[in-house]
Image (cartoon, rainbow, N blue to C red):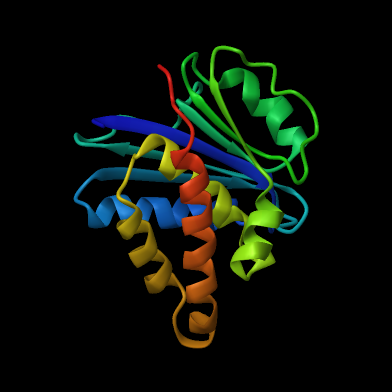
Length: 185
């Protein structure tokens, strides 16, 4: 894939900025051009939080994307705000733990993920963001999964190292789910 961009959106504390950071680090480790543009409210937890990650084989002209190819969305307000902006033929990964409405996009590939259940089964209910990231990577093959796992290991060190294994397991569970989806352009 020469270039792509994904918008990850949810409430502060749902891990979208971390998921974007892991994706950006994985792509950089693979020698790709990357931009990571976070946006969040001052209240951190509970406020809005989103990040745009652009990946390319050539320098990225602008990190600001109005109509991304993909959306990973954790909550209904973010779906309502960003769902209509995804390009036709794009991919929308929907957190069915918190979103119970139809996406309303027949022109996109929609991947439904019960992120909390996937994360709980993998051993870390708090890693729902990694289930969502895994589903997107599995469906799009935008970066090698091993690069994401290496980024997880690099992020979860020191006192956080005890969470690395369950975070990798949650990512892999989402990855397996995403691989079952056929993305049609």
